[in-house]
Amino acid sequence: MKKNGELVAIYEISKILASSHSQLEKLLRESLKILSLNLKLLRTVIFIKEAQTPKILASYGIFDPQEHISFYQSFIEQIFKNGFPVVIPDLYAELYSNEEIKPNECSENPLSLFCIPIRSERECLGVLVCERKRESALDSLSETTQILSLAANLFGQKIKLCMDGSLSQETQERSEASSYRLKHDSFKTRTANGVIGQSKQMQAVLDLVYHVAPSRSTVLLRGESGTGKEVIARTIHYLSPRKEGPFIKVNCSALPETLLESELFGHEKGAFTGALFERKGRFELAHGGTLFLDEIGDISPAVQVKLLRVLQEREFERVGGNKTIRVDVRVITATNKNLEDAVLKGEFRADLYFRINVVSIFLPPLRERKEDIPLLAEHILNKIGKDLNRKLKITPEALNLLINCHWPGNVRELENCLERAATNSKNNWIEEVDVACRRNQCSSPILWKKDLHVVSTPIISSTEETFHKEETHRPSFYSPLVSDDPKEKIIQAMEKCGWVQAKAARLLNITPRQLGYALKKYGIAIKKF
Image: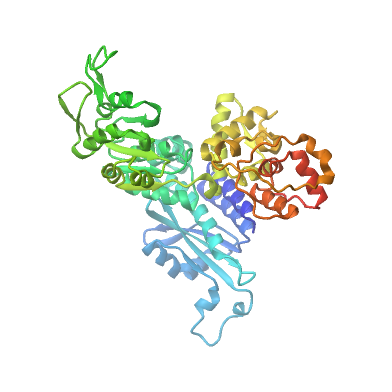
């Protein structure tokens, strides 16, 4: 199985489940069919808990439902009890391990069984059971388990959506979206606030978010720029008991020290030149709610001292004032800097570091959760389409190109890339040629890479000097390639850049035309994704 095919399968399932024009059983059966065909599954069944017994909600590839209920009974009860998946590499060997006479199935290829819990938040609603023949001992079970877990998460959200309320099936299908918005803050945070992620990494982040949201603990969000720290901060706020209160945000790096102090704590009339009236600070405005301090690593030592006092004592004075003001505010901070290194250098107070670092949540970069790119792309295109009054879609070839990109700018860069592609497209379909790297217009490697190097080893011999007329001798912003062999260096560059020639040419410090000539010279076949 190819990874991209599995991701496209999850993407197609999410589209099917997003429909509200069919009954739940039909949507689930269509989803199981997509899953079975892409993962080569023999049988797939979704069981839900009804009273104390499992009930088949949807299936694909089975003929006697009652027989399968009794066959899987022990595994299903085990999952309902502890909530952990069960994966058996050889089903019949496991069932008949203590018997002398075994069925004929034991002599065939091993039949692997996957039992995956279907959850909504922390509640186990059902079990996804799948059977598949193992083609070899090297057949990876962990990858299949991961993909099935992604599908089970989608099923859990849809089942929970349809189970809530006492409306009939037909009425519920028409009103499920609006009722879910009213009843569940998770809909608001996962969709309206942009938290989209079915990958293992993002599910771990969301589990931690759900766990920490009800408390008043200070949270430190860490991760690269563009990973969605503000979105996660809003999610924590809307899932907390403070959801009815204000959510106030401050970008600490956007203001100088004097203005930042006034912005946070407010000032009295006449406190400084230009202070013509009394002004409340962000802490006062966030009373009863949440204050999000972005880029906390950039604040000055003087502001750090005052911020520490607010976090410890829940009180402060305005600039130029002597009246102590008490506030009830939950503080969420974020940074893309190494705070530990800043503490060691004396640039950041250790006591403040320990005060804000009560709960740390690390947001993974987009390159480490590529399973989320299809869902993110669809969400972003829907948002762009509303602004442009167009119904935008993306071709599988263009989607595969996005999946194989490195994305140093993370989700923010993906948004910019798709907006540019939508502008370039001549119709409502985003095609591969519309993406910037296919048009040699992708500048993110130059803007985002920190190390400056010059690739010194030429990949074209001196006898081909005529092709050097286009050479600009610009510095390379990539790490040097380890091989000295010209052909091997080209292959390394292409592999590093996902076989995108424009990016590989910049990595090698040559023009795309020169790279094309070199590929032909050394007989290097271009890999297609």
